[in-house]
Structure formats: C-alpha cells, structure tokens
Image (cartoon, rainbow, N blue to C red):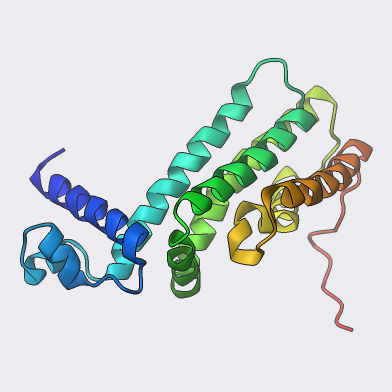
Length: 208
C-alpha cells in the first residue's frame, strides 16, 4: 500500500470511528481532518465529500459480507436448498448483528441508500450473483428446474430484501425475523423444486 492509499485508509478508519460514536450527521469533514492531523483542504484531496467516505466504508462492508456468503457455494455435502437457506439466514444474521453492534450505522446506511441508489444497486448485484450460482447448482443437480436462473435470483432477492437490511425496514427482534424468513424460504424453495417459473419476465405489467 503506497502513501496515498495509506492516507485514504487513515481517513476511512477515522471516519468509521466517528460515525460509530457520534453518528454520520454529527460528524464533519473538519472533525475528520483534526483526527487525521491534516488540514481540511488536504482531506478534500482524497475525498470530495463526507458521503464519499461513507460510501467507501459501506462498500468494504458489502464486499466483505458477499465474500463470506460466497463460501456457501463450496461447502461440501449441502444441497441447493440448504445452500439457499444458509445464504438467506447468514445474510440476515450478519447484517442484524452488525447494525445492533453499531446502531448509528443505520443512519449512514439510510442516507447512502437515499443519496446514492446506484451504490445500493451495486451491492445488490454482488449478492444476486451468489444467489444465481446457487440456483444454477440446483438445476445442475436436478433439485431445481428453473428456466432463467438470473431472473429467479432477482425475484428471490426482491422477496427477501427486508431480511437483508432488517433495521432499515423494521424493529422486529431477530427471532421474529427468522420466523418470517423461514416462511418465505419455504414458499420460494417449494416453487423452485416444483419448477414453477413464478413470473414471466417478458410479460407486460398490467395496470389495475
């Protein structure tokens, strides 16, 4: 890691601590400049805004989570249904516990989602790729019969989005969320095993 990279990481580390302790809204670029022993002008050479720093923090967390979830793909002795169950529940638990440990990160996540929807979509795409590979594994093993794994992975993600970012949508405790997710999972996996395509992706939406 060269000097500019070291400085960027120093800023990110300082911001992560500030955001977790004081919250995103109460942290200023001037605060971060002081924490990093640099001038505000120098800080802006590395990040154009506080939101850019928050996005870097959130991206690193997203990449790390998807990396952990990707290990599900190579677990021995697991059927496609079991891998899908592992994916959904590990995603829920990891995010739930992370936001419980650092509740002020909920504020930051809400702001990034609102101000940078393209970033949110980027993270969803990373997770959807793992889902697609699980569905394809089920097709290859004969457990599923899905004509369009990419489309179905998108529908699975849409149906379970509440559980990927639980504290952004609800204040239910983890056990209640797990109960709901188990019900949604059973509906999804039953359809995948039966070869039900759920929705025709090429069909026009009919307005009421």
